[in-house]
Amino acid sequence: MKAVDLLKKDYRVEGNPDAGIAGVAYDSRQVHEGDLFIAVKGDKFNGHDFIERALNNGAGAVVYEERGKTINDLIAGHGDKAWINVDDSREAMAYMSELFYGKASEKLDVIGVTGTNGKTTTTYLIKAILESCGHGVGLIGTINYLIKDKSYDAPHTTPEACDFQRLLRDMAEHGCTHVVTEVSSHALMQKRVDYTKFKVALFTNLTRDHLDFHKTMEDYYKAKEKLFTDILSKDGTAVVNIDDERGRSLSSKLRKSGRSVLTYGLESGDADVRAGEIRSAFDGTVFTIAAERYGISETLSSPLVGITNVYNILSAVAAALALDIPIKNIKEGIGMASLIRGRFEKVDVGQEFLAVVDYAHTEDALERLLLTARQLLEAYHVAAKTERMLKVKRRDFSVPEQSAEHRKGKIIVVFGCGGNRDKGKRSKMGEIAAKLSDFVIVTSDNPRSEDPKRIIREIEKGIQGDNYIVIQDRNTAISMAVELASPGDIVLVAGKGHEEYQEINGIRHAFSDRVALESSIRRTISRPAFGGGINFRGAEAARC
Image (cartoon, rainbow, N blue to C red; front, side, top):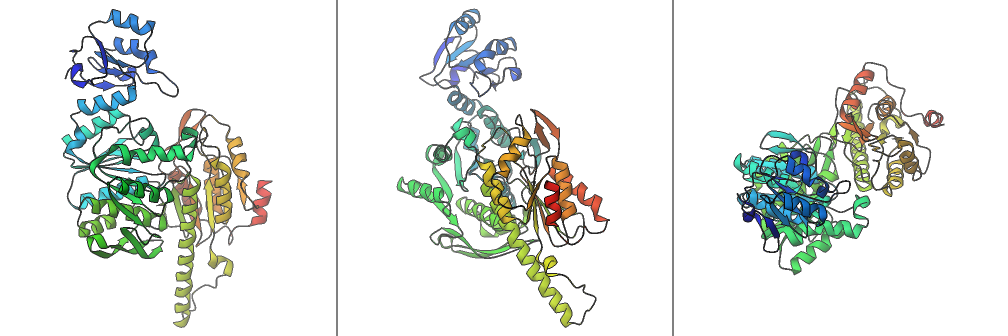
């Protein structure tokens, strides 16, 4: 392919427009012989400062925004290259990458999922449903990139435009017919998925997050909205959660513009796809779905637990209906999708309490996690009480007597907040944690370049009461939670989920919440129980 084949009418070209293009790159270190180098201005670095390095590495063409003496000198010295001046390098990267990689999205059914919470779980659920139909599926998201069953590391939730289009091309070439991708607000603002043909775009919800980047909730919403108003194919379908205030507004706007919209919800009686009769326990969830438009009234069963996952499942069901997937395959796919790394991931090595790792790192996600835990705890202890009563009726006097405190059970949560991110949510998360759990251990998350003690102090500002302690070392904090747990309790480790590192002073150290939790349980499981629950007086002493 030649540079001239990637041009828009308003691009300004000097040098050799017939220069051959072997690949597309935005990082000068990744440039190979004959590549098109696109100089992008980032938060920390400006790609225009690395044009000469890209040329030394063999770039055959350069896209740039800024014009000055340095660029003039480079153009004069490298007239055999194609020099393409544009108004917006990111827009040009999306446009040119889509062309270079053969308009791959036109050969695939691409489903984009955006929103604050639930994106990852929803993408995996949709993937499972599609695979139940025998489709080859690619997945792009926070945990990893999947081409069918082959997994690749995911440096970004949604990769840069040239990497995104190359992934789509590779997925099509490896037999994928569908691609499910998370679409982050950063990606939408930075035009990483522009020019992609989306068959379905799905909106999960909008709550506070990334305000260090977007500054206001309105800016954050407008970034999400772009997927539906500017990028979704004209014949595509928007799937929207109308229990969410922003989702309802989005749905109304899209319908007024003549777009195809399919809504879902638990609380909204006018939703196209609704859930009801929800029964959730430690081992899974059963509920009914109704979708009159499709003549559907069915019962679904999933190994996932909690109201949050009911929303995730409902969103995946709605997306599948938009793709004309039969209800038989939808039910099968939902039943198949079980463990999703770091999303209410149960850690079970034989202990008598429920231990969970979850990615909840926003105030809304933490609140949903704790409410889910509370619902499960209540359901579990009602069932346990019923079982004890039945055993007594059968005159099974081997059942040990249990105190009211023990029967109630407790929720113990370990969490922190990331550094160099939205500071406004820290005190709010502290408030929610202390209000909805029985005991809180405030610890370090990914402090990045911030002082972890300062982050913890900001979390503490929101905590009302004394049902918490501070243990800065995350591994020690997790071990303490395990030590405090009694049979029938729930231990939640929130914030990092699937991540396999902890970033401190810009350096990533190997660390996994799941591994730390599992190791702590194994160390204590053969020892006698701590003693019948949390001693709040002891906790107060530990904090002092």
